[in-house]
Each structure stands twice: as structure tokens, then as C-alpha cells.
Length: 104
Length: 104
DNA sequence: AGGTTATATAATACAATCGTTATATAAACA
DNA sequence: TGTTTATATAACGATTGTATTATATAACCT
Image (cartoon, rainbow over all chains, first blue to last red; front, side, top):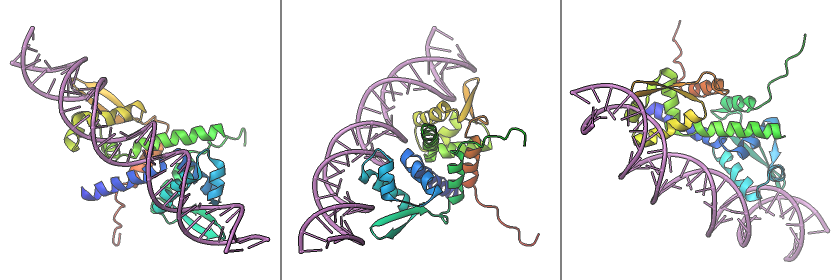
């Protein structure tokens, strides 16, 4: 049961990281394309340090990767994260369902 | 963007409910079969009121359904919950990967 | 070198979460 | 009716999460 407990703990940790609206929105944007910190600072109604902290949590858990280019730090989703597939499923589940075609 | 924000909020609320080890374990068990409160009280090293509170959160959000039978209350996963498919994906992601057969 | 821009960290306050113990309710049973 | 069993609620405390402001660091530009 230790094996199972670890899996539950890992999953609950992972889901905890996704269970914040700001972080989910960050990931939703990163799913579309790379963004720098300043994009998110503009985007949200919270302080720059608050944004920085959210990004740090996602980075520390390897859900996102960073790349410095001159003075900007760009973030992107890490496709090699163990739960990457699940992340995509969750992000897709937030998209609007496709509008069905009338008469193909 | 209001539409999107709502979707993000709903999802983060949903994931918050799943981001607790005890609740994930409860759901993992309910995925196998119905359980009564007393099963969970035996199973975990927390008090009966603590178990009751976790079940209340899952019930209030309609992730699980309850059924009273004599003095026991039985819980089961609600297959009609809007995020039911996602829940199953998450529960399955916690299972051990199948051991590949050597030479079929 | 000094100023500006981009980002991170520290200190702190507040709110949310999760546990506990004590108590209430509801059904079963003697 | 009184007791036992199953479950829920209330009150409270400890821990964690998330925000803020102030400050530090790092890169770039005169």
C-alpha cells in the first residue's frame, strides 16, 4: 500500500498546483505559446511578486521550463513532465466544446 | 473572457477538491465500489468528524452521491457529474501501469 | 558608472484548509 | 423508553496558501 500512497500523494501534490485560478490561467496561456513574466504581470490584477511566486511553484515542480533571453525570462510548458498528458487533458477540458456543424 | 474565467474558476474549484490525499484515496476506493462512512473511518488515521467533512465536500460538489440504508450511509461516484470523465482519467493515472507480457 | 527595466526574494498579514474534541441527530434494538 | 451504533455539526486551534510592500539582483543602455 506504500506504493499506492505515494501515487496518491504525488497526484494530490500535482493537482494542488493546478487548483489555483491564476496558475491554471497561466498554464492555459502557455499551452498556446511561450510567455514572459511581464505578459502575466500585465494580464492579472495581482502584484508582480505574486505572479513571480506562482511561476516559481510551477517551475519548481517542473511543470514549466524557463529560458532567459536578454533581460526577459520566457516560460513554456514542459512536455517531458510525468503528468504532461494529464495536464493537456485538463487544459482541453476547459476549452469550449466545438460547435457542431449543421448538416455537413 | 468572462466565459473563460468561469471555466477556469470551475476547474480550479474542482481540482481543489481532488488535491487532498484523503479525498483522492476516498475517490479511488469509490471507483472500485460503493463504501459507507464507517469503511473510511476504519481506513484512515483521522477522526470520524474529519472523514465526515471530506465526504461532505465531495457530496456538496456532486462528485459523489449518497444513499441511506438503515443506519448506514453509502457513497458512490456520481457518473453524471460534468467532470466525471476527467475524474476517471485522474483516477486511472494513479494506477500502476500494466506489466507488459513477455512473449504473448 | 549610473539609471532603467525585468524579475526574484524577504517580511508580514490575512484567509482558507484541515485537524481535533465535544455534542447533536437518527436509526436500531433490548 | 433508554442504550448503542452510525453519522453530522459546532467550536476552536494549527498549518498552509496567497496576497501585499519593501528591497535585492541581473541585464541592458546612456
